[in-house]
Length: 421
Ligand SMILES: *Cc1c(COP(=O)(O)O)cnc(C)c1O
Image (cartoon, rainbow, N blue to C red; front, side, top):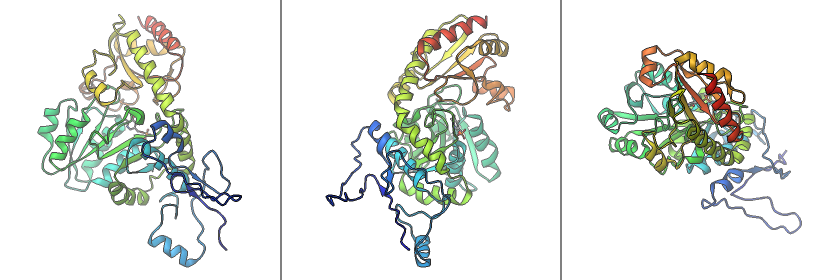
């Protein structure tokens, strides 16, 4: 029996009109602006012509015959699937939409941001390889680079990511991969993507960027030289705190020949339900992230120089050491700032406990403003000396700005700072 189901990929073709017989052709154009791509790219419609993307909550796919099954395992076409760990129509829609937005040839969606970081690194490396990484990293990224890779015979050299001379000195002829967060979590150091890519490519190394804090909205990482970009989709792509996910973006060659074989056989693939949440997230991401970044800028300016603070760290402030770089690289300071509250842990806790709107949690990029004390939570496991070397002081509070009115947020932060005196 032939399956009546017909899946049509937007950008390739659309079902013929039954009255006129005319075939409506939709060609997704690369000239479309990001907000147009964010709502249309990658869409696949079933014979029902649903408006909102369908969730294909299925692990497997039925073959018409044994011969057909055999053929599909030899080679599957663009819209032919085998098993959801390998690929799924809803996941494919998400991969194509985020790839179109990022300006990447291809993408592989993963179960979390860390599945993307560890999957990209492990698929690209083997025993004996050398990696150079920025030192200022999210706690779990640091664990993968510092504790896991070494166990498999990969040597990792850490540098101060803001210093191009240190990158130049550390990158060797046998360096295979360069890794950094383009804006580091939580100290918001900005790394010169073009500068590091030039040094890396001169030695034949591939550059893998964790671009979470830049967000796909402000990223121009591929134009600036990146080979592979990863996102934790848990952050701004979902943007509403619902589900974990991630994505690895790059050339067709890297994604299909290096990343996909590793990911599909080791189990870190994204679920179709998650892909649907992320697809809907992409539709509103541009509006959300721009509003959050504008509020972050307003909050940073309102609290700069406050007597209860040792420092306000925000790349959008003229006082930030890489302010000119972030303007050139992204054109905005992002959605996260960090406050160094006087009085160490006690001062920081008093401030956090006095907040009325901002909530104490550890996600970021959410519609709700979320504040985190990295020294006792996300970076707790690091020894004190290590925290100090990364700039994670006892007074440091990370503030991920949400979609509340910025005047309310400013008032809330100011009253909570008064409470921290
Ligand atoms: C959150 C985060 C990750 C990990 O993402 P998960 O979705 O939580 O696995 C990786 N890198 C950075 C910079 C992050 O902020």
